[in-house]
Length: 55
Image (tube, rainbow, N blue to C red; front, side):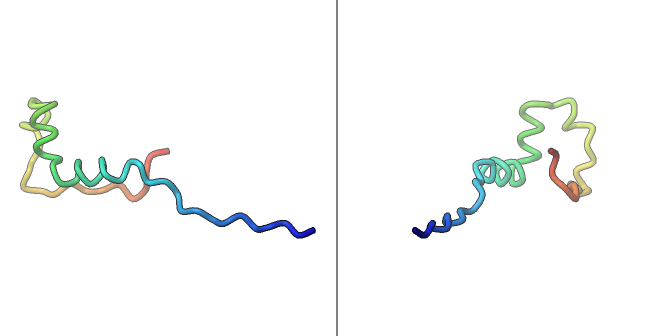
């Protein structure tokens, strides 16, 4: 009797669409939800991504 090896599946990426939307509309997102914060940001500098994801 042989046991079949499970087929590896790629990890789920349910949050990928939200990440793409926020990346594209980040300034609009902050201006809409946090207008005070948005006015304090120097928009001439692009956002600096974190080297790792939060756990």
